[in-house]
Image (cartoon, rainbow over all chains, first blue to last red; front, side, top):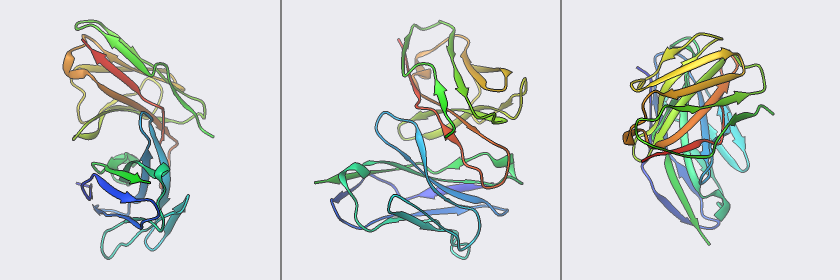
Length: 114
Length: 113
């Protein structure tokens, strides 16, 4: 079945450092890929998405490119801020398999120190 | 923007009580979902619904039931709360279609004592 694997956290960075959070997936069809962010005590918010191969999703300085050849959707940001401290979830959905239900990775906690 | 509202941010209930968690969305979405989130276990799907009066079991439905009498409201019911149901509960909705993400509520942190 479909699945998502994320790098384990926690990830601790200094402010203005470069961020990469790795995400790889397994899917039988042509899924859409998502990154969600969860700030402390909150629900999940959609950060960015990509719906087909080679698409790049971007938002708030974060980027991720849908790489079909490596089945990856790594999240990157060039310069993190303390306010980026949160848990990040990679997810996929395939409308034609499993009816579009989101399948989540385990989440990666990011802590940014001043 | 779509809004998904969960009625309570924090709840404390006693073992054996019947607990209702309410979720309302305001954008006419067909699909609604209940997840629970626990440290080290990520998000696990409890139940979902593709239409009014329709429900499907997710990965961990035991000890839970749901109700969807109106399109905008999806209720999660703990028939007899137990301490192992202490968790963060997240409701989400989405419209039908490929490439459509979920919109989540802010979550309800339930403690069963």
